[in-house]
Image (cartoon, rainbow, N blue to C red; front, top):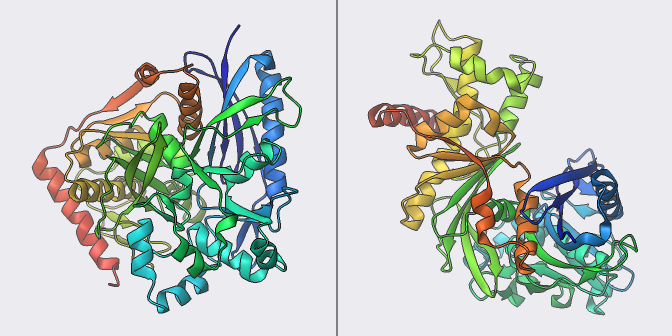
Length: 492
């Protein structure tokens, strides 16, 4: 009898169900999108009932598509979009409001008020995160302040709130288990990552009842049993839960101190495992928890940039220099070698490590011979330069010599970009054959918890490697040119 491992990756755009065999091989996937509810103010929401319904349906579709005996599914792991805030009734499981998505900044005035009260530095010191409406705390505070009856029901212990994982766990277990993992807790801005517990003072500052918060559990811990609303003949355990970037770090096999990964998406998340002792820095990256496994936590440094894949979308949709992302590789390779055009993609300010929300984008270094190919190459280059910025800062903050960068995401198919990334960092860039790293991470954690997998599972992952071919003097010259271009757009 086979033992399959099931993974659910509940992401910003949709929900994926993933099926793995006992060798850790991805056999099949099924996904469904959900609505992006955006109003005229730019507020972004998701329908929690739609997400839950899609979670059940993707599992049903997966089993049918794979043609397996569903009784051979042994365990479930869940990865999820981070920071997105959910609030629901404990008894019924019914949402009191739509999920407020991580992209939504409606909590900005709440954060401004808290900063004026002088709490920003304390919150950063305890949570590792700069006070921001990006995190869950201000979103939950907004619900408490603006949705009728929530505050009163919360005071009576009738409200549950947290990140998407805790909502799914609660509903999938028939409202029997209300738990979240350390990685998701660390991204709420309500969790003290030094003391590893919900911070009562910060909860009070945001006006959120402690009784609303989930029990924090190991990422490979016990999250109860589910039969997916009776679809399975017998319930299976949920034994892996992680935020999506943390799941990708784990799925990449970055289990040791000093290992680092970058995900190339619309934006990019760069995350470095810094071991069991936190490192706090003012160099522009944040400190979070990677996960907790077997009762031991690992910390990470993390930096996020706003525009990586979105730069290519801009080239295609807005300035119409290309008709598809696939064209960029050949164009970049055909660009004039001596051209030194730089694009700084501060379309909505600069993220880590600069944190200048008022910066604006620029293309500079143009000469008479600069054409389409050179501008396209500059667009690809800026993705690599931004990631290089963060990797360098992480090396400096941690005091760890970084030996390689593990990467994932759609842009890793671009041969020019991957070579340029290695050239700029001066270290190997390694790309796994598998693509669903977030879901793989949570599923592997669940499979390891049941001893279906062991750590050797990561050695079986086929990887493509790029190694630096650039002389140090040229690397330094090109990177210095990038830093000069960034200075042109900085407002502080």
